[in-house]
Amino acid sequence: MIPLMDQPAQPSPRPLSFPPPLPLPLEGLTVVAVEQAVAAPFATRQLADLGARVIKVERIDGGDFARGYDTAAGGLASHFVWCNRGKESIALDLKDPRGLDVVRRLIAGADVFVQNLAQGAAARLGLDAATLCATHPRLVAVDVSGYGPSGPYAGKRAYDMLVQCEAGLVAVTGTPGQPVKAGIPAADIAAAMYAFSGVLAALVRRGTTGRGGPVEVSMLDSLAEWMGHPLHHTMHGGAAPARTGLAHAVIAPYDAYATADGGRVLLSVQNDREWRRLAERVLGQPSLATDPACATNAARVTNRERTDALVAEALGALSTDEALARLEGAGIACARLRDLHEVAEHPQLATRERWREVGTPVGPLRALLPPITLPGGAEARMGDVPALGEHTETLLRAVGMTDEEIAALRRDGVAA
Image (tube, rainbow, N blue to C red):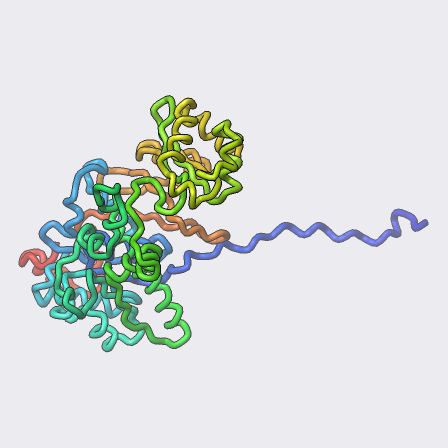
């Protein structure tokens, strides 16, 4: 046995070390946007959340017209608050050569440029993607339009509801007797997210080639892509899916059903095994599992009225909580039909701490963290919503303007 004093010294425990947090992926990049409404602003907000510096160029006479849509967000427009956090606002008159020159100076130092002006307006100003990328080879420049730069609809005005109609979304949404538009600006959001992903793809390519390049996104192209299922169903199957309200055109039961306390519960039975469990453990009628009128999905769709009546009778005798508990216990996919006040207090969002506060000109407002979570990195940068022209002077100085030049722009109504 070795005496204690002769034992080799034990090494001191090494302190635990953790890798430093990763920066946000777009930190160090600058985006300039001549944008309005939803499609382009929502795209550039994604870039701002991921760390990019976003400079928003607005009209001097009221700015982005989405600022005037409503006053629901503490006196601010809800669309604007949603789409424009984390940006710097500069107000310029681009019809004046001096205002346009400021934008050109900003673009010269930018990595990305985004615009969604009316068709042809950007080209007249020399701010279309092709022109800018010819001058600045490393620039990623994005043109967002309603219908694209060519074709019979190129010059047609494009607002979200109109594009929803042209893309066929309205034709498959609603009840048998009444088509309706989506309750969110689906065409705007579709175009925004393709513009966002297009920018990211172009930046990756720039990293390997050294060249940026133009990106083109149209609202119609974007929403038509989202119409893939009903389009393929119609083109290759011969019949368009029927409008069925909250029900599903080819699956039953798949609908919302009233409960005893005035709520509504949505459930979806995806296969005949689930139907058997529903019949036995929720409806309390095991014989329905083998009843030829409802044993298969095809039969249940054919006999949809009877199928729905059976489910409605069973759930109508239960409270909403009871109905959900019984459905969950039977392994049936289900959901509570929530209004927006309930969504704002959703227990899943609260438990996962998805809410933050964003600074605005009227004080802090609640906002959801963006859906992209980057483990190990910094949290999304949810910057303040800017007042119109809040950063005009700072940005004018940043492009080299003197006090006298700035004063002249303000005096002449070119900057605000």
